[in-house]
Structure formats: structure tokens, C-alpha cells
Length: 249
Image 1 (cartoon, rainbow, N blue to C red):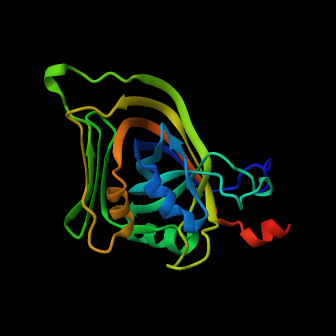
Image 2: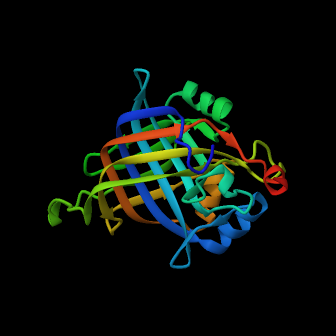
Image 3: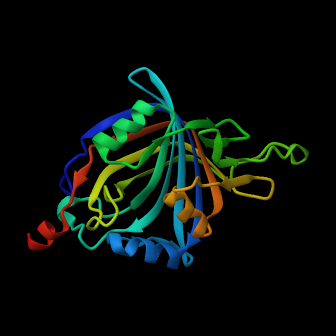
């Protein structure tokens, strides 16, 4: 995949109902956490930028819902221009799919850290995201109804998207620097709303869920909602950018 070659999409989904929650966390925490993997968190105003994306979509006629949790990263030193998409980029911490077969495919075919869970995505106001595993709600986020204040108005509305690399954790603990990634694209008409008093957010990681536990430990704080009622999502196959090969070449 060169810097100028068009991306070959392994999957393209249309008419996706999407709710994204952007926020920030402690940059020093993520700098220390990602350093062994060769990544550096991207910062805004001294904080690490993080994103939770929830989608309700259909693939080959099968309806599913999924939620992913990522921290934005700067281009790693081993990702030279020869492999393209130096920026923007994110590091996928964990993800959940409402279909166990899709979660399995993501793990086996893409090497992505997916798990099966009951997932709810509501893009109509008041928008909401929920992830439930084994009867335990591990993630909940919702826009408050604010009946007394009247309908919520977006701070901006229009075409908005993201396209770049999504880096994946190594397949096992103690493995070498994470070098696998896929290219993702999210686009569509978006409505942005600030995260305000009355909105809700909670993470309750299950025992052994190190990824979500790290999000909690980093002090993640939501700052903005981004709602796309009719989005397009696309992703490439997983690529491997071997650091030693790139440095030698």
C-alpha cells in the first residue's frame, strides 16, 4: 500500500447509523502505556485524544451493531512514507460486536481485538450507546433529554469524516512492537453536540478486561458527541509494516 495508491476496501458499509463520543485522557498515562508498542498518543491541549465509535449497520444483509474504543496516536517512527497514511492514526484498544460470528471474523481475519456483546446504538436524540457482556453493563453513554431546556441544537452540522490507519495490539502479551494496521474511513453528514451536564457516561470493566480498565485509569472524560444518521464506513484488509524491514529498506 503506497502513499499514493488508492485503498482497496475489504468492506464498505452504507447507511450506517453512527454515534461517536470524543474525549480526552491523561497523556502521560497513554505515553507510558503505548511506548513499549512503539506509539505516542496524539495530544490536544496537553491531553491524549480518545474516541468511542458506535455503529448500527448491515453487512451482506445481516444487521449488527458494534462499538470500538481507540486512542489517537502520532505516526510511529517505523511507519515511513513507503507504507502511506502517516496521519491521522489511532490505536484500537478494544471493540465489541453484537454478532459473535462477526467478532470471531474480526479476530481471525483482521487481527482486531473484538469481543461478542449485546450492543445498543441509538442515533436519534437522545442518542445512546450501551455494551452489555454476560448481563453486565460495561459501557453506557447517553445524551440527556433536557426536556425543560427544549430540543438540543448542534454546534455544527455538515460533511465530516476521518480516514487513516488503525493500529492493532500485538496478538499476545510480550510480543514485539505492534505493527499491524488497517485503513478505515468514516464519512457522512455529522451533527456535533458538546457533552454537558445531564449527559451520562460510565465504564465498568469486567475482571480481566485490561483495555477498558486502562481507559478508566487514564481518566477518560467525554467532550463531544458526533452523530451521523446516514454514514459510510469502510475498512481495508489488515497490513503488516515490519519495523526492521522498513528501517533496513
